[in-house]
Image (cartoon, rainbow, N blue to C red; front, side, top):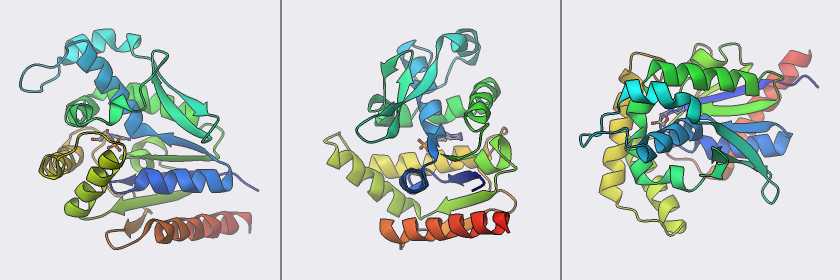
Length: 233
Ligand code: DC
């Protein structure tokens, strides 16, 4: 059976990664969370004191040091899911903190960061058989993806989901702070000059505000099967 690329883009915290991971596991594809890559570079910048008190990043210094930020994934044998590493350290939990979430957008807006990570993502998907989620996968990274999905949900629903997720992990969480962060990131992600969040031409839209996780999983699986079937005709 021909292997395809599934590109899943959409707003932050709208359940893209849950859907993407489930599909990848189900069909035996590799899953790549590109947001984790932008988060890991942001963690690198935080650790190297590259932000000022207003949350602005020192782009010149980050560009000079970018080669020292090696982001990679390793498969967790227990879950069979990729875990994010920064310079050989497992940062999967650390990159999900609100501190990283509230600094990531300016880093993700830098052209040299996007170029470096886009290149790495294209290499990861070179042999197809991949489910990749992010903001620009269907528009920039793989405009030729056979299946493109654009996922969205209301900001309040998304903030509630992230709040529940952090609480379940025993991590500190404040709903209002999270909602503000979701709204700010929506604005920055869709208004930045380079690779703004957009629905890719040919993408199927999924508003999952009112959907359960199993319903989303089923919806995505059906779209995947339809696409593969169409290609094998
Ligand atoms: O999906 P996420 O919330 O983990 O993504 C973290 C940030 O990275 C988000 O604010 C937007 C940015 N991002 C991006 O610009 N392009 C991608 N392909 C993935 C994420």
